Figure 1 (cartoon, rainbow, N blue to C red):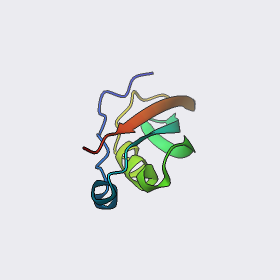
Figure 2 (spheres, rainbow, N blue to C red):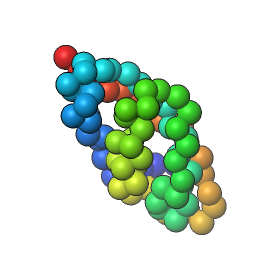
Figure 3 (tube, rainbow, N blue to C red):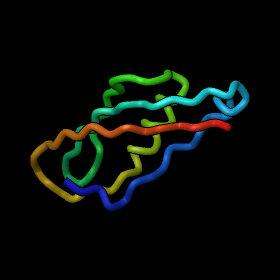
Length: 78
């Protein structure tokens, strides 16, 4: 399954201020070329909304059957 249009999540301001880094693992349910559901499997809660917003803008290969993919999103704050 391919999602040629992927959007990088924005690092939340609070994470920048706090110096919080981490990795979020998300399970993406994809149907009809769109992400229809996101389950956050692990990672700092401060990044969950950013991941949900980014994957909601993904553009994936259209398929009538639901596909499930797991993707990691790493946030690094210096």
